[in-house]
Amino acid sequence: MSLRIYNTLSRVLETFTPLEPGRVRMYVCGMTVYDLCHLGHARAMVAFDVVQRWLKCTGFDVTYVRNVTDIDDKIIKRALENGESIRSLTDRMVAALHQDADALGIERPTYEPRATDHVPAMLKLIGQLQHKGLAYQSGDGDVNFAVRKFEGYGKLSGKSLDELRAGERVAVDDGKTDPLDFVLWKSAKPSEPADAKWDSLYGAGRPGWHIECSAMCGELLGQTVDIHGGGADLQFPHHENEIAQSEGANGQALARFWMHNGFVTRDNEKMSKSLGNFFTIREILARFDAETLRFFIVRAHYRSALNYSDVHLEDARQSLKRLYTALDAVHPQALDIDWNDPFSARFKAAMDEDFGTPEAVAVLFDLASEVNRSRSVALAGLLKALGACLGLLQQDPKGYLQSGAGLSEADIAQRISARAAAKASKNFAEADRIRQELLTLGIVLKDSAAGTSWEVAK
Image 1: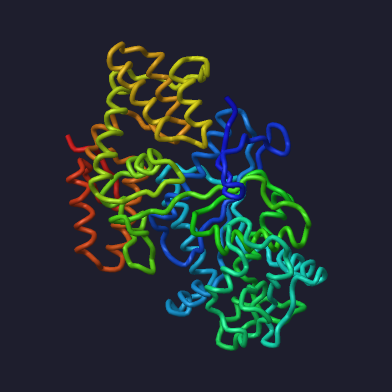
Image 2: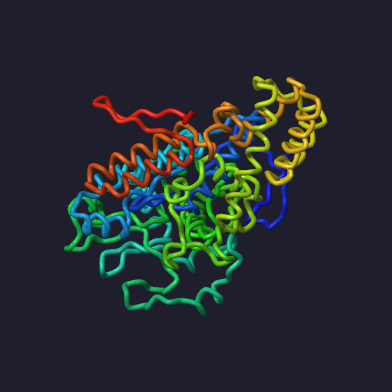
């Protein structure tokens, strides 16, 4: 069976064939780094980590680009509030992003470009659009994209220009010739710090959000990529505007397949910072181990809504322990997967149908049941190998099961780091809370002049 992917652009499942046989070029929109990553970010990172893992498991050479937006109004505002430079803020947040992603077992992308390193490419793309009559500079210095001059605007989101006009909230007198137009280059404001400005033919300023991804995608992967992805909230306007910019400048399709992961909800309401009902990854990892969180995300289909609750996380933790219990009984080594094996074939059929992780996880449980019955080292090795395709079941089973909550070494190290930061800021109550929490989970901390070490409680 060939891989089929739901293409948001065509709104149907399509058989996937890359532009270049055996090679996949994938671009996923990453985070705007002004704060810690939340569960919605984790959902997107895990979803596309599974995509790239499965492509590699089935023989593709994958070049995966996930960008970092490190210049933005929110970043400038937060840096000013903190009294620090933009680079200082974004460096800290990128480091935190990596810590969270590493804890969740998310493989680093092939390239992780920062927007500020690609401003010349953005200016070049803006120049191409202006040359083609698709961009204009307004009286306030901003350079805008002329939406009505790009034929086909709205094809990804399914929105017509009349629908967009009916819902517009932008006044024409802000310098745009049409409220639907969006900014490509933002003229610098006097109040903005020096590191928020770049010199250009359009004057001092900075790029708009949408042009960043068009430029980085094109520069690193070429004018047309095989897969372009991100969260469902990016479908409009971000991805719609990327299409307009890239295809307006180059006359070629930006992506052959568009993929969007579903929202994270809490009590069936979309989780978001604006609603104040979100959790950071670190807040969740203070109560649940990282692999449990990953398993919670993976066992839902990437396009479905993911409803958060502690009850669902606890169920995920107990389910994951069942799989590790099967491995602990046999102590296997991962082996090369024989895709003709009945379990492997079922797993592959599930994943080849738009990355059907719920069905693939069901195969893992069937396989675990057979391992428990037969004590087969070969089947246990297959369970471990198939789990690796999803980024699961790679820890030492006994260590996972004995650590109470199944904390990995990365989980424990993250908590020790948080405790050290709390002590440094003289928040001794928080430091004591972390120590007690780890003790409850079966981890004993030992402080010494050389630092803090740990061991599993006897």
